[in-house]
Length: 96
Length: 335
Image (cartoon, rainbow over all chains, first blue to last red; front, side, top):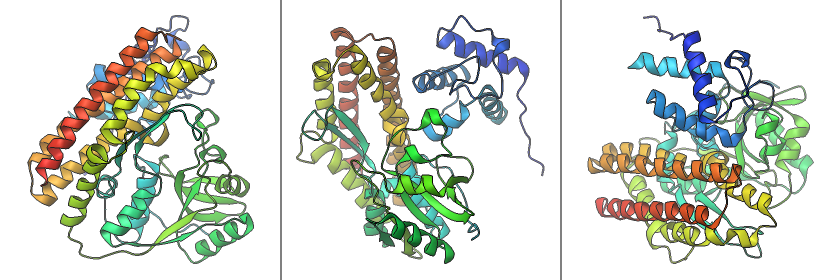
């Protein structure tokens, strides 16, 4: 049997960018300037976050998408970029 | 030298993840959460400012090394361990073990691992990972914090293994010599839970277990007196978030992992009530995460007035009450 791979949409990526910006009250960055694949941490993306922002993002994702990110190691990798968050949300949605 | 065939797995915590991977490699099919529970990994300790600690701090799991040693004692596993004062001997020993196709756990200072992104590097002398091979001047590492095996330069690994400071690794290495077959988990699980309940409820030390959470709640309002200035205080308050979420999996993570253990324990001991307690502990874990978020927010915004610290204190006191009720029920359930 072939595995069903959930492909995230551009709408979902945009929604995630908006969620992050609303959560962290970021108003001086345009969503389209945020690279989907570049790490959100470390200063290489238009949206540059620090580790303290990480917990805010995890809790916002849990609330909005009704997912659980209990394993912090896994969570750290999931919130690394917009693409990795979108892939996780898509795969969680496809399980429902 | 080549890479030893080794099943890499991500783990929730470096020590339990490392020990689990090594045991699985040796043919002992245990999960990380079951190992964590049997080894009584859940814990709390608050350390107020004293000669050893220049600023108050806390821990949320048992001492580094206890997961391995408790597993050894309760599951009948034998580990071979090595410590070194001489880095050359320490690196030679590692090479010799790898040449014998033995994957070996290594204790390191996380800061020196060059595969870790620069913004995530902090000095933690008690990080554990498995060395599974060597290619030219790099070692191949199975680090449970990362999704795939990684490479570390020989010099970086040497510096990490022989870093100085508190709890310095001293080149510590270990691997399982023998593992049991056909184990009955009943006694190991019961002993693990009893010891965890003792640590959290009855240990006669005022800064350990539930008493330690209450001490943390009472003392956190005094933290401004120990800080040099607002910047220092905000750094220390934000460290609550880092200790709860980043370094060593933290409060919520350890509570979630113990909740998973209780699910497994319910089946192994045929005590369905443990599944209810597991759900209760997940809610307690969410409460720790709220504390983490609160500390991150007030620290980052430099919003550190007495009122805010009292709010933080109240949140911690709630966790103490919740954990006290929880561990009393757990203790009663396994009597």
